Amino acid sequence: MGKPVEELMRILDRLRGEGGCPWDRKQSFESLKPFIIEEAYEVAEAIDKRNWHELKEELGDLMFLILFFTHIAQEKGIFDLEEMAKGTAQKIMRRHPHVFGDLKVKDSQEVESNWNKIKEKEKGSLLSGIPRGLPALLRAQKITRRAQSVGFDWEEAKGALEKIEEELRELKEAFEKGENLEHEIGDLLLSTVNFCRLVGIQAEEALHKACDRFVERFSYIEKKLKQQGKDLREVSLNEMDRLWNEAKGK
Image (cartoon, rainbow, N blue to C red):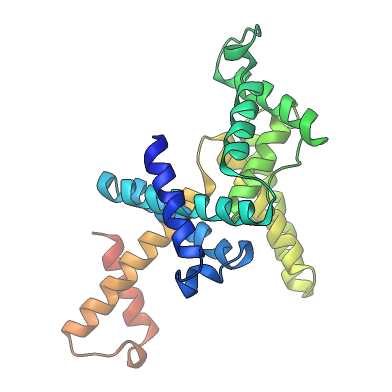
């Protein structure tokens, strides 16, 4: 493993050095941030497609970007690859006292609870360390899961479902009054995410799949209208609704 990583770092030396690539030489932490987020999503998409060749390629791209960030940090004298790897190894061992220490645990749930306790001690707060930059549904699920680890949770999913109904009523009232709509929509979304967690559903994945169904059905409408020589912009809503329902039935 060491030699390929060393080779990648030598490639970065060449790309970033005198006579290297003008694009690579001008990159910074800030300019590379969108690329590492994009690569992480491409890794996730390869997993969703169960395309293992593509996963290997995307993980390689992600790894290269991690090394790129590390190279910039090394240039600035902030940290180097060895420091980063050593710090990560120490952190993983510290958060697994049931493997690298004497702590006894019963199951994975207890492991997660203990992990959160250690993280809380390190960060100073149970909810610290959950990035605001996460997709909002994922962030909401992580926040409510952390709260659940100390007992701040519904006793059963039915309570969370009733909370959704309560938030929906409040949203209707806000809509009628024409005020606080964003606030109430946010509360409704958070309550829905909480319910998803309690019934074992990943809210982010559920919404992705709903989007996929929408795209598939809308594409069906486009295809059917094209076969009939019609333009989307020229047909009635009723006709599009009919084709939408036809797509749902397939």
